[in-house]
Image (cartoon, rainbow over all chains, first blue to last red; front, side, top):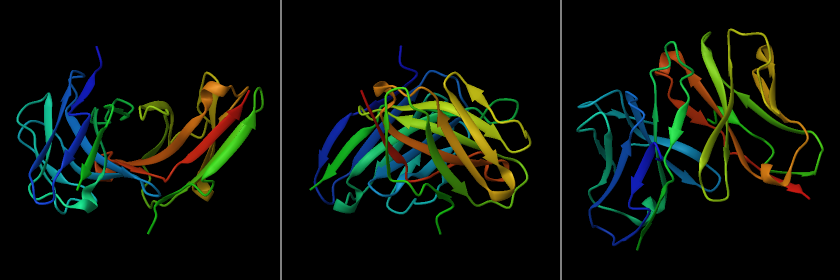
Length: 115
Length: 115
């Protein structure tokens, strides 16, 4: 029933390993976003997408890649995970903002720990 | 530079009191929106209310309303008749048309409403 789901919900990874965080939305929204949340920083945008096949860099893209293979799915990839990437990651979907509010709907978050 | 500022890291209230949470932002755009989200203790992000820049009327939604001072680039969220269930962290976020309506978040205000 949840419109934006994320998997896994918790992940422990080793430094230098590859991590893939997955997001699925059933809102039929064109736009999808990946944020990370750290104490004292609020939510910061990593990558976003305007539709299948498109990815754009957000405010803090270094060390991350993104993939949008379909309208519903948006992945965040850490090719070489580092301890500084330990954080809570949120996926969100939203409409284009034109004619709509432009609000975003968030997934439940993924807690990633890189040891 | 922080573009969205929430100077109150914490706040408290007694049951039934009105609560005001402040936010200021920086933009040179004419078309933008300010969103308010609440993060529950579970981590879930819930959309509360938004204010479009072109609307001089303060928006209201249930017990939530905003005080929009466009010339000062500030906006306050007002929660009337606060309840313990309103406890959580409140984020304001700036959304600009020129930036594709991406959200730039403040660092949040953690509110505790005492029963």
